[in-house]
Image 1 (spheres, rainbow, N blue to C red):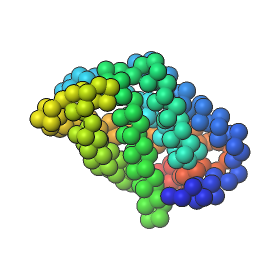
Image 2: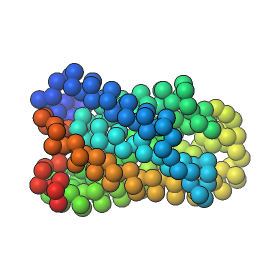
Image 3: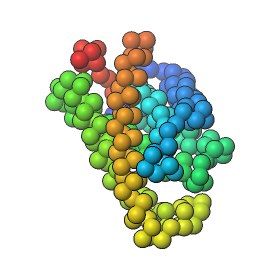
Length: 209
């Protein structure tokens, strides 16, 4: 994906609209993050199911990859300062995970648009790609970083790290399983109120299918 391609895709929307959109969706993500609307994973309570990625995914469709990455980065910076969680660098792990998810959705969207798939199939393709790519990348990230001492990791030995990896893999897979479809649902809810072209357009006909 080239930056020039994205700029061409979103022509017709002003820079001020994009900046406002980034601020809005970053704020929504922060509200969801700081309001503690979350569920600890029953199999590993240190892993938390949350919903803050949903507005970031909606931002992707409306304003593009760079805007959604900016919104996610703002969210990460604020969390690092005020609420990093049990691991000081945890928000950075989240930023990596959500970035991979966004790229997977873009791949799913481009494949589905080229193949003229119904929106239900695009959701399926994007979700499956997000599950596979996010899980694979985060296994590598956690395996590489968790053995380091805080704030980068938990100072786990590689043997303990290997024990935790299946739970981490399952967590990332199941998180993508609900956040991607919810992102599409959020897009459907707001798309009728927009008066400019989406960065990654889903036609009204496909959106209703």
